[in-house]
Image 1: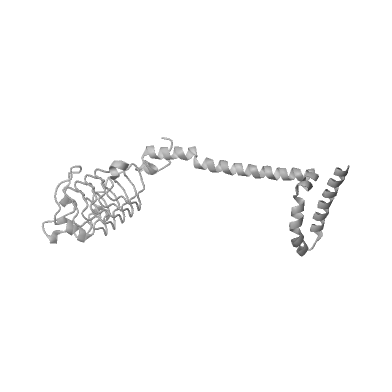
Image 2: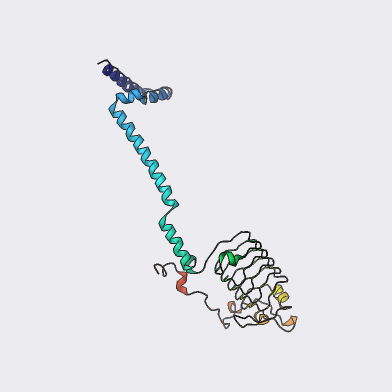
Length: 278
């Protein structure tokens, strides 16, 4: 009986304090609030009130459930099979929208790196923007549509590479080796090709600064083994300086009578929807 009386007294004390807190002015509640909260959660008072104990148990259970759910969500995101399947499918198709490998090397230090040996020849639409590529080896690589803006490729080896439609503006290409490379429709504006090896390179419809074109024409020679086009012809070099053209090689951009370049990819391959599920 004594134990029962003590539990009743404790329960009544808690109820009284809570009631007083609700009626007290804001200043008094601020002073007594901490004491009331501590009294409400003492073990004896909690055990004295079955309802309060049940409520606390429910709160603790809910907190544990939330923690477990959060941990499960993190684990799911870390190893999402759907994401893994998407990455595998994209890799199997050859990159983003099935248009190439689209590997990322932007800003990478590839100095002296044999990029082909390490990453393969299929580098279509890959990003080399601002990459450090001094003496890098990309011999025979397929760099169609690749991004090499502001790349530093001093003495890099592009021999026999396919650089069609690549963006290489504002790049450092001094002493680079472009022997027998296909460079049709490549953009080389504001790039420096000083002392670059261009024997047999095909610059058909490339976008080159006039001064750079004139410098290349001084020693251009050879025929590309893939396209059969003369390097001098692809640069529109003439017999004298006065015969050098005064515009870029991309005549089809301003002259409707010029032949348009062949599409490098099927139109359907530019749509993620038309190839879905194939």
